[in-house]
Length: 216
Image (cartoon, rainbow, N blue to C red; front, side, top):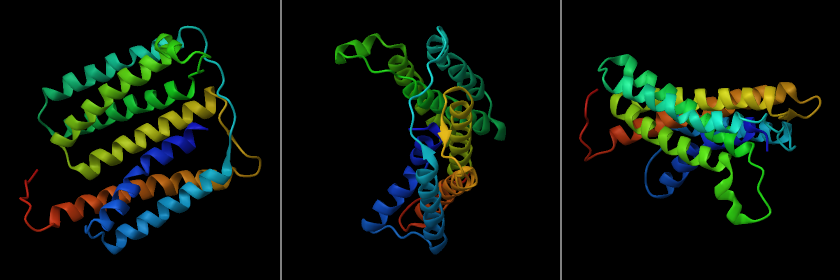
């Protein structure tokens, strides 16, 4: 599937989490339900706009470049870790978004071999694992240094926008003919919904009784 659809679905996983939490007794504010509906509408638009097609083959060597992208993401984390200002969380969130976008690109370009065991020989598999682990650690560091809503918003936006752009320009991701406007609208709505749900879910957790509020 095109990266703009897959990454939007992953970004909106916060909506699924929030919905499950409500069944367990956590209350979501009315505005949170509105953003949940906005995000769901965006995903529907993206679903009908996407044109499923195989990804274009990368040029030789690009898989190794994707694998090596874990290094600059780790370098960003190392630099930001030594800083204690408001820019540290921003840098870490951007680094996490970059790492997760590489994960999406690597998975999109993977051409599964006939024998399953040969997957361990495929660079995209190692790129997905290494960049995924690195991005997860960097994202956790960002959450420790900044507000969850701001950090999540930056990470979602960077990850989804960057990987979607690369998919459309280089990987032959396509929008169905005549569906460009619905696709753009759906992309904006899906990301807006994901950020909104993350915001209102975080607000609900902070206001929950019996929790200590740690100022930032």
